[in-house]
Structures are given as C-alpha cells and as structure tokens.
Image 1 (cartoon, protein in one colour):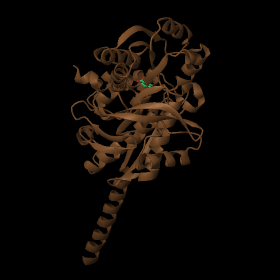
Image 2 (tube, rainbow, N blue to C red):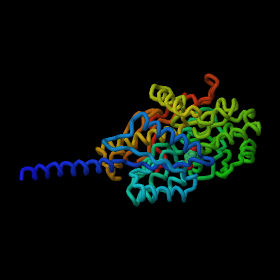
Image 3 (tube, rainbow, N blue to C red):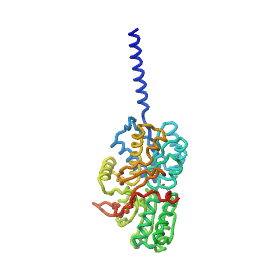
Amino acid sequence: MQRRNLFKVVLGASVLALAANAAFAQETVKIGLILPMTGPFASTGKQIEAAAKLYMAENGDTVAGKKIELIVKDDTNVADTTKRLAQELVVNDGVKVIAGFGLTPLALAAAPISAQAKVPQIVMAAGTAIITERSPYIVRTSFTLPQKASVMGNWAAKNGIGKAFSIVADFAPGHDSEKWFKDSYTKAGGTMVGEARVPLANPDFASFLQRAADAKPDAIFVFVPSGQGATFAKQFVERGLDKSGIKLIATGDLPDDDILNGFGDAALGLISAGPYSTAHPGAKNAAYVAAFKKANPSMRPNFMSVGGYDGMHLIYEALKKTNGATDGDALLGAMKGLSFESPRGPVTIDPATRDIVQNIYLRKVEKKDGELYNIEFATVEAVKDPDKASR
Ligand code: PHB
C-alpha cells in the first residue's frame, strides 16, 4: 500500500514536471515583425530589423520568464501582403504582437487585424497622424509628420525665411507634412508661394524643382520618405539649385543618416526638423551608435532604427509590467503612459492617443571627421502630435 502510494506520488510529481515542462515550452512570446525588406524602401526594413535584433542581443531573449521569438517577414511594400502576413502571423503562428510597418499604407492595411484580434500593433516607422486611430491596439514608436513639419514651419518663419515653396511626396504622410508646414509657417508670419506633390513611385523631381525655382522662394520645404532622399538631392544639384541661393529645409526624412553621406557637399547647410540624428549628443546614443555599427559595419543608425529599438523596449517593458501576461488589453494598459530614455532623448507614449511624445530637434548638415551629419542646434521639447491635438 505504502509502496503504491509512493509510486503514485512519484508518478504524480513527474506528470506535474512534464506538465510544467510543456507549459514552459509554450511560454514563448512570438513577435511578428513585418517590414519592407526589398524594393525602394528596403533601407527602412533593414534599419528596423537591425535595431530590433540589437535590442534583443543587448537585453536577452527572456522577459518575465517568457522566451521572446522574433519572426521577420518581408511585405515587399505591398499593402495586401502586409495584411495577409499579419493575419497568418496572428492566426497560424500565434504571435502576440505585430510590429514594424515601414509605410503608412502598410500600417493601415494591418490595422483591422490588430483591432479584430485585439493584438498590439507597434508602428515603428509609418508617420501619418491618423494611423493610431485605426485600431485601439496600435501604439506608435516612430513619429508623426505633423510633429516634424510644424516645428520646421515655425522655425523657418521666425528665422528669416519669408517665402517658401513646398514639395512633398503625394501620399498621406506627404499631405500631413504639407498641411502642417504651411499651417505653422503662415501662422508665424511666413508666406507660401507654391506647393507641389510628386508621385511616390519612381519620383522625378525635375519639373517640380523648376516650378519651385521659378516661384523665387527663400526656401524649398521638402518631405520625401526615407529611401528617396538621394534621388532628390541629385536632381536638386543637377538643376543648379544648390548654387541658386534658395535654401533647402525639410523634415528629417530627407537627410536620412543612412544615406546622407552619399549626398555630397551639396547637402551642407541643409536644415531639418526630426526626432533623431546619429550625431545626437549624450552617452545613451553614443553607446547605441557604437553597438549598432559594430553589429552592422556598413550602416549608420537612422531615425527609423530608433523606432524599432524603442518598439522592442516598449514590448519588453510592457511584458515586465504584466508579469508575462500577453493578452492585448493587458499589454496596451502597460504601454499607455510609459516614459523612458531612448537614444533620441526622453519619450512618452501618450496614454490618450497611444502616439509618441518626443523632442523635435532642429539640425544642420555639417561635416565632421570627413562624414556628413545632422548636427542639432535647437530643441523643441516633448512635442505631441499636433494633428490629433487640433481635433
Ligand atoms: C510613411 O509612409 O508614413 C512614411 C514613410 C517614410 C518616411 C516617413 C513616413 O520617411
């Protein structure tokens, strides 16, 4: 009898151990990272993937007792593909978070999946203001274009630029940039002398630059998405605009640190407004840039990369707060209101909008040690998305 009892106890204990093991094996939290890894916006995908992997290498792949697994998928910048991948990752792979989203149409395509499945969607790149309103489970760690364009417009009007011509890529973040540059610039006393929208696919800026030059502005304001800056810079120089006396001002998307060195000295003096520069001062960013370059010797971390790095931090911190619980409402609750020190400076997730609140820096392209950098010279602190604040 005693022996049988003992046998039962031993058997019971090993069943429990087995069950615990099985439970442990299930304790993997999968994160689906959906990005354009090929095509004209591949640099956004590569920057974010590199930064997310760096974050995991630095912070380990276990949080609150759960193993973190990152599944990277290439949506090739096709919105239908983003949506299909988001669905497959949630339904078949059981991911608890979807993240990435290199462009606005791609972020919008995944929003219904996040809303229906109640799965957190971390937007690490796309910057149109309305994105976060398309699912209550969206949190953004990148930026909004109104944040950058409004700061640029206000600075320009107050710093001797009386007349401006705006050129933007003809899709939602370009429209946001145009509206918010114009709004803040004219409110601060500037005069718009023209506006142009350039097709997103295979852009040819030549005729738009000619129109801008003919309008004789003091400055041309530009938004082009990360990945297109080099084409713009080349055509700007080809038309002789670098020698025309017309200043070039932009959102930080144009003088993207990933490709800025390729612009050549024509970029010197370009002024932009953005949340991150490779040259941002401070120990946190110095360590980030050094580690990023060590892991990716041919790259400089750009503003897209910090969206990926901070997005991973947000997921890790949320899991710590929920003690590893992964349901969407618990994770969202943990993310709302979170503040932390990013390589870009202090950031907060606005609990009301789930959008990022961050410093926007004014920067000027300068040469340091033979390389071109966006050197910060002024800071507008804790900028909320002005588009949502205005509604
Ligand atoms: C966007 O599609 O929202 C987007 C893409 C590239 C940028 C900024 C915004 O540099």
